[in-house]
Length: 135
Image (cartoon, rainbow, N blue to C red; front, side):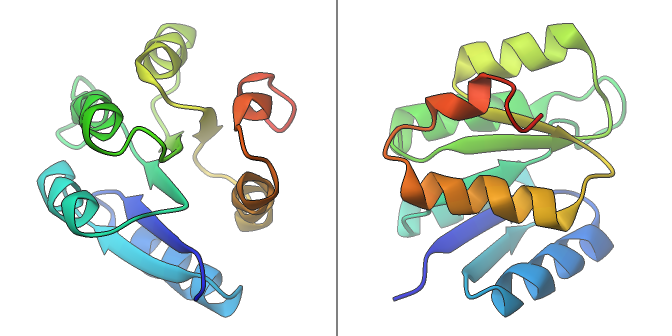
């Protein structure tokens, strides 16, 4: 059975591109336009990784941080990679403090993202993501 990834973002075009790319790379893919839908999917499925935006309601929105908290409570073994256009060192530190193991900025290379996800399959602990090696 292929590995399953959940992408969470409020940009449907981005989700479609991620879904197509990762399906072509051999993964099963679920997509959620909202953190609420993502929470439902997480309760029903196991994921190799969740790749999520942070902001869903504009520049000040931080619903993605709450999603990280939810994942830590309900699927603690699932690595979370943040993918966001709203970058700050404070936001990155906060996301990692809450349990995110990686941080990518939009736009990012699909190949770089797939490399990060592929390495999750090969490495039992995703601590290497926090090292900044691929960031």
